[in-house]
Structures are given as structure tokens and as C-alpha cells.
Image (cartoon, rainbow, N blue to C red):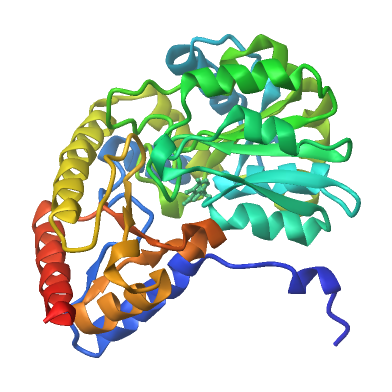
Amino acid sequence: MLVSDAIAKLGTETAFDVLARAAKLSAEGKDIINLGIGQPDFKTAPHIVEAAIKALRDGLHGYTPARGMPELTEAVAADILEHRQVAISPDNILIVPGGKVTMAFAMMLLGQAGRAILYPDPGFPIYRSMIAYTGAEPIAYALPEENGFSFSAQEILDKIRPDTSLIILNSPGNPTGGMAKPGEIEALVRGLEDHPQVVVMSDEIYSRLTLGEQPFVSLLGYESLRDRLIVLDGWSKTYAMTGWRLGWGYWPDGLIDKAERLAINIHSCVNAPTQVAGVAALTGDQAPVEAMRQAFIRRGKLVTEGLNALPGVSAIAPQGAFYAFANISQTGYSAAKLQNAWLNEAGVATIAGTSFGAAGEGFVRLSFANSDENIRSALDRMDTWLAGIQS
Ligand code: PLP
């Protein structure tokens, strides 16, 4: 078979590998607590599920406009006004099957050989994977722990070259749980005025899951950037809808038609009942979102306190999402070794920081999308295991 060379450049998401290994161990009768998983442990709220069932019963079985049902793009624009205080046109919204699709489209539109794309390391692994797939050069920027896992605007600006086409930002961030500092965002936006060719893709998929004092700042708030800004968000995390596959992208006038063209060529549209569910999610009761956020706030504290009590481990408090990025450099183990030992010997699934880039060495990601009870047991197991290697 003459498979294309580009496919060999694609990476993967270790979270799915760890999930499969944890599932296999569970199937063999081992008791595994999964802190590897990147999805809320909550069910989609019943009113959202009912809306989709009704849509199916009502006969919404056909294609929708490729950009999404007008009711949905309008609901997204209203949601942006409510949560980001920015008035945008529904014509700038493209509904897609999951946040990842906005990411892939951004890379496909702006990446090619001879271009450079800046991405966070540690960061969501698909960024680097898709950049490489397009043939563009992936250029990492840092999210130092001592900086609260926030980027430095100066570092990003210093790394911009004439062939830089795209900068990827992600706040609140996966895997770190850190958030970009408002001052750094401002400095970056100001600095980008000197680089008018550069597009920014702001991955704001965890925008509603803020856990601390730090405010969420959307890049959409900066008017000077809006004609070269792509915003990625969706329903997966906010509404516990990862398996529904529903996301939205804000695209500037110069890119929306091109993104729509990719959609028409690749998936035509998102299935209609899911889009109806998306309207119900945005326009319905938001109490389940807040209840979930409160649970993550409580568990974030539990995990951080627990991690800081483990020998050789420390963790700063996550500001958003549902991840703690534990510093394990004093354990004497590499991230991958510790991930494997904790899975096989302690029965706790976590993800090595190196799954999110080379700068993740010395860290392990723990998701707290699991019950308080399981989190406590997992911390006990890790404690016992760490005490065992020291004796
Ligand atoms: N962006 C980040 C930072 C994520 O962590 C994820 C999922 O884990 C996504 C995007 C993709 O979301 P979706 O499941 O909607 O494709």
C-alpha cells in the first residue's frame, strides 16, 4: 500500500493508551483507580438528553447546514455574549464534531512545509501531532511551573519568525491546570501588532471550569486581534458531553468560508439531534455546570493537599480544568517509569508528563474527574507505594 508520508508524522494521545491498559487490567480482575481520564465523571444533564431524544422522535434525521443549525450558532453567539461579554455574529461560528476538529482545521488552514507554528509544551498532544502532519515546523514555548504554568509573552514574541503562521494558546490548560496571566495575554496581544501575519488559535475548552481566584480571560475580548483569531470551545467538558462529539469554533471573516469548506469535504455537518442537545445545553438550566465546577474545586483541593503530603511529590493548586500536574522530580523516577509503576503496582492510572511534550519530564498528570473517595484511596495507594520504594 502506498500510504501517504504525512500519516507517519501523526502522533497520538497517550491518555487513550493508558485508558486501554487500565481497562485491560480491570478486566483481568485488578482494582484500578483511574486518574488518567480527561473527561468529567458526570452524566450529561437529563434535559439535554431529552432534547436529543425528542429531536430523533420528531424526525430530525437529515443533514443540517454545514456551519450548524441556525438555532445553535445563534445560541453560541448569545453564550459568548453572556460569558465573554463580546458581541459576535453567528455567521462567524462553525459547529463541528468536537473541539478537536476546530484544532485540526486551524492546523490544516495555516500549516504547511515552510511555515512555523508555536504551541505550548507541556500541552495537549494533538497540537504538535497535527502541526507535524501538515508539514509545518512545531516550535514549543514553555509553561513553567514557577510561573503558575502560564506562558511568557516575551518568550512567544521572541520565537515568532517571518514564516510563523499560527500561535496556539490554551487556558485553562491541559495538562497543567494552569491559567494564562492576564498581564501576559495583554503583552502578547500588544506585541502581535508587530506581526500582522500571525493567527492565534485560543483553545478555551475549559473556560467554564475555573477553580481558583484567577479570572478566565478570553482572547475574544481583544478587538485588535479579532480578525485573526480562532477560538475553540464546545460542550465536551462544560456539559459533560465528551461522547456526543460537539464543538464550536469562532472563525474570523477571512477564514470562516475556508473552515466551512473543510467541514463540507470531511464531515458535512454534526448530527442533528446532537445539535438540538447543544441548544438545550446552552439555553437551559446552568445549575449542573456549577455543581460540577464546585465538585472540581473541592477535589482540586483534595488532590493538591494529598499530593503535597506524598514523599518527593509537590503540586501547585490548579486554577482551571480538572487536572493536577504533580512535580515528581524528587522521587528519583522518570515520569514514564512512575506512570507505569503506579498503574501496575499501585493500581492507580495517571499520565506521564512526557505524554504532553518533552517539558513534561518530572511531572505526572492526575485527573480529578473521579469521586472524592477514589481520589483519597488513590493518594493512599501512591503514598504506600512511595514509602515502599524508600524503605
Ligand atoms: N482541547 C483540550 C485542551 C483538551 O484537553 C481536549 C480534550 O481533552 C480537547 C481540546 C478536545 O475536546 P473534544 O473532546 O471536544 O474534541
